[in-house]
Image (cartoon, rainbow over all chains, first blue to last red; front, side, top):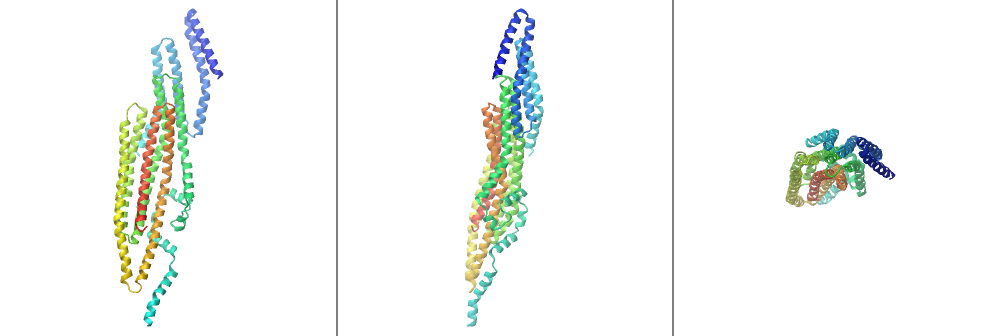
Length: 130
Length: 372
């Protein structure tokens, strides 16, 4: 639980730093906000590995093939990265770029999930032809 | 005087020799063999033969059938249940994992984010991929079992009706043979060509409804209700025809049988009563043969249908639980898909159970009506 204090500390300090930089050196403010975002992201992703390990254990104990879940976790990763990027763009006042990031995330998610859709379509086809 | 003595002693001599020669069990065995049991034994699926061996029924004989205990049946059902529950239970874990991953991912998005919808669909599809293949295999297996049982019935009906005919129930046997041969063929075709395709269409529509925003609810409900309607109608028509037909033919046969016995007893001088009793004994033996054949057939039908029925029940329970888990995790797509899958298993269970009941019911009616 101590991790949340670390995250809160980094966030508050970086927010104060960005505000200060905006007053005196506005050209560095964006860089500082991005750096704080990246640090927080990697810190949180590090924490997420525990959750993924739990899912892995759960799936392997059920004796299920991992392929489908790898796709799902990849989609989750794409979503998380896109969300952070999109929020950063919105903070910078770049709404249209943020929308493009969201759109790209959806496209990448669908591309990643394509093998799953193909598999499902194959099964539906075989069910109908029973 | 001598002639009178001889005539008086003759029936006792005949009875003495008949009694010494008459071996009850041997006669029944011969009757079963001559009825052509080997013909329908060949049509029993290998898996069913193994299960029958396990519960101590290695052949059609009175001893092994009467030795069958309730405990044996319970053990068989339990073993089958333990064997069948593994796969649906793994599916619950997979579905729960997919649901949790989806719920965790959704935390990153606000309420109206479109990426949330994509994640929702992908997680539903991942969960569906875990259950669709086993479900498809189970539907195919259930159809195969119906066909196998239908084949068994087609080979068993002539043997059984010949035993019933030999007992003197000619009308019942003819009616039974005609009706059951028709029913066995019709059930197999009805299942393979109407109900299962309808179930598959319903299921495919439900999966399509999960992936897209299309509202396929009303179409899938229509398809489902049509499948249920066909099942109910066929069951009602069959039970009606079988029950009424057997009642009429049975009473006609009973009259013929009693008349024959009376004629033998009254028309043949001196030994008429004895021959009439011998006729009754032979008929009783045939009755035992017919009952053994009937009970054996009922056990075979039950054992053929037991694995798919248990498997379908396990899947239905696990899918209902998974649907509940989907609802708890707030994944409507997943929950909807699982509840449709549970419904598909329910209809399939209905089809298999109705077929099993139809076959068992028809053999039981013949057991009860043709001499009891």
